[in-house]
View (cartoon, rainbow, N blue to C red):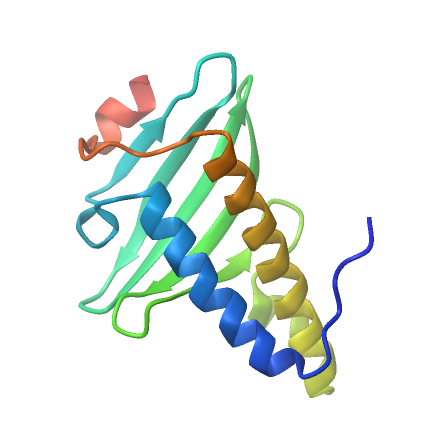
Amino acid sequence: MSIFQPAEKSFWLQKVCESNYEKLANLIPDLARIDEAAVARVNGKPSLHLRLLERSPYTLVLELTHDFARLDEPAVKIRVSLDAKTAEALSDHCRPFVLDAVKDRSSAKSVLDYKWSLNYFLARWLDHCLQSDYRFETARYSRKEFAAV
């Protein structure tokens, strides 16, 4: 599958991050209030797991993943800016954090290409999750309860 490669990629990356925020807000109605972890289930499909990794007043770092018989993929780490209303993919199960992946690259284009590929993937995956009727309820689980689910 080839990835969509727009001209003016930095402009479109911002637009994708804004769109990803809207999609996350539809998937997680209480996005700003998520405590620790939650699970969304759809009959006949793998459960979708959400974990809060970090919280600051205006930013969340989340991990979102499917549970395929205890193989957690794609395990996407997402930085959510509540004030700017953007959601940016930072890494996934097969690609490292952006800063780790690009630290030896001097080209701004290679950094932008890497960030584009992560966030374009997130956009497509969030579309799939929403089309498959995944939604997180308002109930949140403690880490202990989440581990037992």
